[in-house]
Image (tube, rainbow, N blue to C red; front, side, top):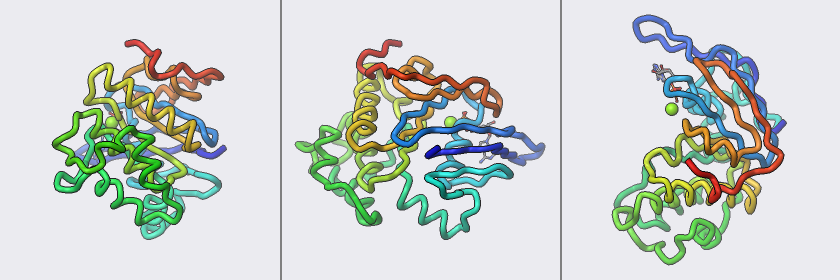
Length: 231
Ligand SMILES: Nc1ncnc2c1ncn2[C@@H]1O[C@H](COP(=O)(O)OP(=O)(O)O)[C@@H](O)[C@H]1O
Ligand SMILES: [Mg+2]
């Protein structure tokens, strides 16, 4: 398996200890889309942050493409995050005084094999707006820039935490459709968090998280195009 998470546990200690992940195991095949579903507080972001090398587990393992992330030193984790992982969040985290192209370019420099700027701009439908500033874009367009920034470094894994959480229905579908196209055209493996169960139809594998445990795993052999999903 491209992504293999096994027996992951995580506690946070603020006053009393809270166990956020209670032995989570998930697998995702290379080139597939995985969706993590679950109510707020169920541990979705914690799981994704550990997979992305931003947070550390207490026990358990994460392997990506045969590399055991959970064994890496702090320096190796930095390298892993830079080279292998693209992040997309609910809020776009764009640099306000850089143009669209400049926001994306910042990241391409840290990759060994970046995609071409123009290819990425075209893929996200922003070629004509590459010289605009973030404030001159809609929310959906800003999220497209953040997706472009995440994929230009040609990551092996694209992690999206509630990427449509701040967007209206139509714009959300456009962004989800873009992610599906990125998966198809660039072969990027995508793991996405959402609390919208309708979105699960566009994923190969769906993990339902409940109170820090995987309650259910579903596999889809046929993906529903994001444009056809209703909620
Ligand atoms: N850095 C942290 N320090 C302390 N508690 C945290 C931290 N991050 C998350 N938590 C707690 O862990 C639980 C799960 O959080 P999270 O993984 O963000 O859930 P989700 O993304 O499913 O909403 C929540 O109760 C949250 O308050
Ligand atoms: Mg979260």
